[in-house]
Length: 285
Picture: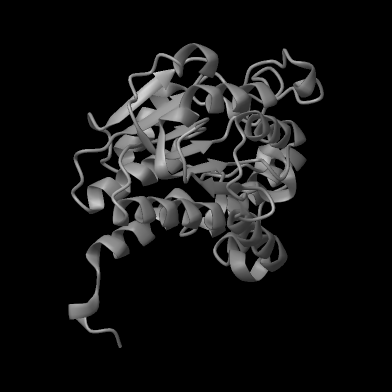
């Protein structure tokens, strides 16, 4: 048994925060909700005893839900089954974000943290949670999003990827709702700064001096390129650039490739999982 003297309260808090943001604790209730919803749509009465024993009665669906949450995708890849978590990045990518943040803190890499494309805010809530856990008041967390979903494609590179609100309203989360999500964890304060609008409009003039962690989840070629063009030079040497959707959306990967080639960036890209990648900045360009 672990002695009380060796327990790290900050680490316990952050591990619990991850479980809450991913809704790993009550994942069985998500599966039960989907079952009850499906029953209602089919006009049949749900089996109440099954709802009380989801992991046994719906063992395969629960297993798939656990796997999906770990990998950072929604159950059955159906947006109706998007779940109740506050982040879609999954356990692997959230753990990697944790590692990057602790790395820059340990190495005293100067700068704030930002995510561009926040959905329900989970990754940025975790960023603020780390600062709270260690009593760090000198850094900010920037929450950048249109809060109206993704833009309609305007570039030929994005022509096949219309992820806009008209098609996927589940991806559009208001700034008010994201703020409420921060409040749920008692993490909404003046160290959290919101940047509302399209990246091309908000990021170039954003009052950000330096960044230690730049996390991009803009999906599209245009959004990814807008973020890198506006913010890459503000990433401190030793800081991290994390790209979500690199492995699943070719438009996103192409933007990263084009930007790195144009800027002669040769730091190796490292894979987090089948979807996310990152690299660590070692030089000023």
